[in-house]
Amino acid sequence: MIYFDNAATSFPKPPEVFAAMTQFMAEAGGNPGRSGHRLATGAEAMIDNTRNAVSKFFGIGDPKRCIFTLNCTDALNMAIKGVLRTGDHAISSVLEHNSVNRPLQKAADDGEITLDRVGLDESGAWRVADVLAKVTPKTKLVAITHCANVLGVVCPVAELGQALRAKHPHVRLLVDAAQSAGVVPIDAEAMGIDFLAFPGHKGLFAPTGTGALLIGSRVKEDELRAWREGGTGGDSSSPHQPFELPYYLEGGTPNTMGIAGLLAGVTFLKKEGPNKVLAHERALQQRLIESLGADSRFTLYGTKDPPKKGGALSITIKDRDTAETASILDQAFEICVRPGLHCAPYTHKALGTFPTGTLRLSPGYFNTLDEADAVVAALQEIAS
Ligand SMILES: Cc1ncc(COP(=O)(O)O)c(C=O)c1O
Image 1 (cartoon, rainbow, N blue to C red):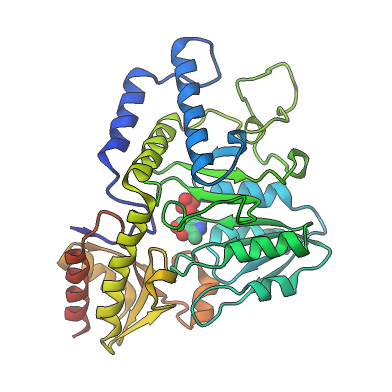
Image 2 (cartoon, rainbow, N blue to C red):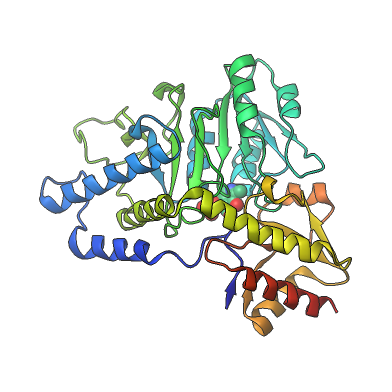
């Protein structure tokens, strides 16, 4: 079996990840913050260690500003619904996943906000100038992707963040790092990011059910509304959610087992070296781009320059249906890829691939160049 669907979730996970999860469940599985006994305090200590490791990895100084979530969608909703108020304006792009599109569209449809979506350039990235041109005094939030999941092109987040801080300091920048976290280097404060949303289960090698929202130092607690309230294990006498991060946004028992896996995933990534991981993923992309790009039966979307890419490559095959191709790859070749719209309909409208979409090849750290060659050979056989 060849797994080329790492943009959906990474597979396999490093053995260290499930070892840490099993060990946590077997030896330390208390409810953090809920009781004072050793299993509860042990779980709390593990969570604190994970907050420290994750914040440090992404350049956030205060670990209390690392909020654990269920996935990237949860983190994005937390920021979008937490920040926007009636009358605000938001800016997004056609590259976004529905976890950005839909909460923004709902707020716009309900008449709460106004919304603009910027287009993409010839490489498949949004342009800084297009975003800046849309900013008005009412703009509260720019919610935008770092690395789009259909095209895998890395977008100029640092340039945008720095320009927004210099020219429009009233605007908050929310970055969807679903495809870039763990793959492309991110220093959130230096890049001018106010909110960084990402899953644990993709580039950070953690299990599904994990993610985080990192909140930059510029954002004050009272700018945010908690969109979920409940027990935090802290002061139970108060009728209100404690106004203190991370608990303000973390009502309910967290996914402790998953967070133990997240710590092991980040530790694995640091041990391997993020640059080595990125170089390997780009080498795989380069092999795919060179082989498929040289064959006129395939159309490749987005830049063909691997240093400008994260982990995903979208293609179509002349006279072949993408869903059927993915099914043949699975059934006949034991190759796992994802066909269709990839939850990003506006991207496909912009590319002209709506509604059938593309075939997305997303190799990961554990794939080899031989596997990339095998995927190319299978696609060539299907094309002919
Ligand atoms: C760019 C992008 N944003 C958001 C998400 C949503 O992530 P999750 O499934 O962790 O909620 C995905 C998932 O594939 C994605 O690719």
